[in-house]
Length: 108
Image 1 (cartoon, helix red, strand yellow):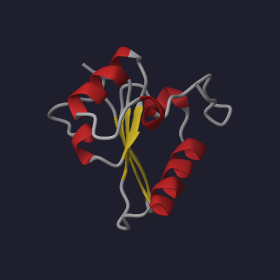
Image 2 (cartoon, helix red, strand yellow; image 1 turned 30 degrees about the vertical axis):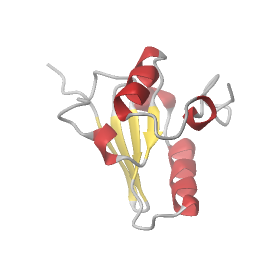
Image 3 (cartoon, one colour; image 1 turned 90 degrees about the horizontal axis):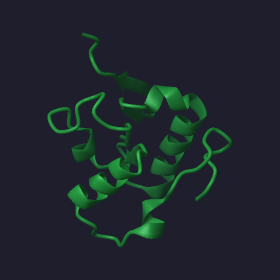
């Protein structure tokens, strides 16, 4: 486990622990079993029809017009710098070069 720039006691890089090509459903189940949020560029994980806000530990979707490691690292750094951990829990968060949108569960 590693520190999350002092904001969290630990985080896990799934590339360190799972093989490339792991099916999305297996990855999602593991993240949920460990009660961790997922930071990804895969839009499927932020699909509100399947991962409704409030039903999971949180999803941070990195959206870049440029498919490059550098672009995604910059977006991840933006998320880490600007988000508080309590904002992530149960939310779907979209991070772009223009800003951050947070979608939370509707209050009853």
